[in-house]
Amino acid sequence: MFRIQTFNKISPLGLDLFPRDRYEVASEILHPDAILVRSADLHSVAIPDSVKAVARAGAGYNNIPVGPCSDRGIVVFNTPGGNANAVKELVLAALLLSSRNILGGISWSAGIAGRADEVPDLVEKEKSKFEGPELRGKTLGVIGLGAIGAMVANDAVNLGMEVIGHDPYISVDAAWSLSRQVVRAETLEGLLGKSDYVTLHIPLTDNNRGLLNAEKLRFMKRGARVINMARGGLVNEADIIAALRSGHIACYVTDFPSAELLACAGAICIPHLGASTPEAEDNCAVMAVRQLMDFLESGAIRNSVNFPRCRLDQRAPYRLLVANRNIPNMVGQITTLLAGQNINITDLINHHRDDYAYNIIDTEQQIPPALLEQLKEVEGVIRVRTIIHGA
Image (cartoon, helix red, strand yellow):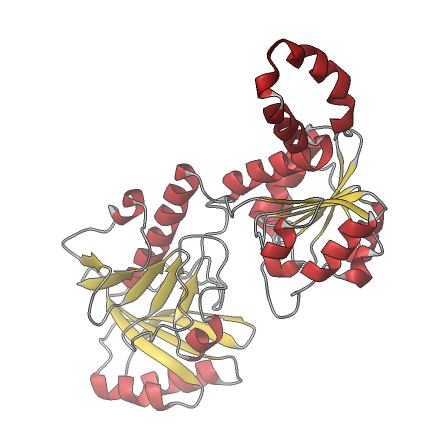
């Protein structure tokens, strides 16, 4: 029986995938095997030693202490693409809101509601105050070409925009999904200098916090517009406010309001609605649950943010799973210990990602408890567990 602890309200469409004869799911549970979370902050939560994985029903994962989890061999999953369409649609709306002064026009119209017969004439007289440029023919710079960025780029092409993208870490899947009309920008500065609109679609890390700051904003055209539906910390708030006040940036649309931005003319603040659709919540929950079940039952890893993608069809009765630091001779030490106990390996796969590696090893014999303890003592090994096929 696997135990799953939930934080936040998780879509029933995902939770219903857990077979009740093999999974216990609750918000309060002892010794959970895994944690399923949306937006709850786990940085101050004491994660039990029994936890093998944390799954975030969403793309962002800055609410999860990824570094400490990695050091403990806890695999952290996210669900890239699960909310991609929802965010993409809001980005398209943001492009229009940033250009056409739709919100200003709506607000003005509400103010003349009591003027009865004057309304038609007033509308015709004042409408020119709210005009703004069309998107067609303008250049959109897309920073980050993952699931969301690629969808935004493709739809912008269909709207008649010229689209350039910058992503030095673009995946093969994302590259295949991109329209051929999306032009690659070699540098971030090159993208900024050519764009009438810039939209951000990258995760927030220590390396890119404040990515759009005063230095970078100077590369942008006067009157350009910035869309940020990714993470608030990607844009230096003080610098974007200064650029708005000087008129260098015409509009900043963000899904991450603050008191300062709310008080700034030219900033359009949306209350974090990027993934707030029932479809996105369902999609992310389903993806997260399936990834957790696959990992707990077979050891397979996909869409992890801290360990490598790793999968192996199981044909032998027993499976050994080892998470370790990515240092030399780890596989050799593990297989030597198995050979010393006459354990026959039928199949093996080892993948690494940055500082961590993961091994799936199928064997014909069950690993004795004493050997498991020996494996745990190997320098560099972080976590060891076994699976019996069909159990």
